[in-house]
Amino acid sequence: MANVKYDYGDELGTLTQYNFKFLEELWKDNSELRQELFNYTDEDRLRQWLKTKHKIMVADDVRIVVVDLEKATIKKFVENPQNEKFYALVLPPRPQAYPGNKAYQNMQAWNTAHYHAINDSYGM
Image 1 (cartoon, rainbow, N blue to C red):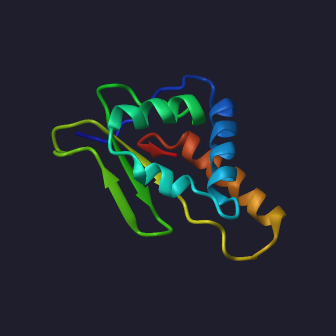
Image 2: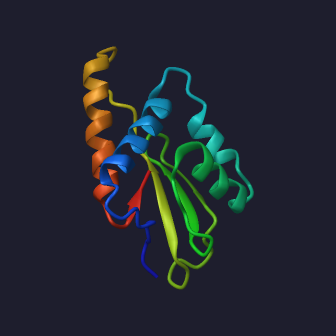
Image 3: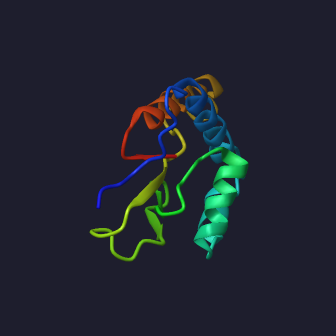
């Protein structure tokens, strides 16, 4: 089956802001968010945590795959992606082009947050 993403309806701006806050936490110095996501062994608890803490909605019948592009690691709860619906939570790498430039990192966060809000098959 194809990747699926929760339908936020016409709340694109709201979703972009949720994604931005997620990225702010992900890209903070000494952030534990990447490791925290990979520490989950129970998919339902991860689903609930994503919804409650980060407003990332994943339906109960959709499996979760976490893809960390910075560390080239994958955590997946889906066993048969050809026959199961799944959501790919993609963790983009921290911007590296201008170290210490908060304005650049802020711009990258807004661009990435918007991209993931409009993409129809995976997100953050």
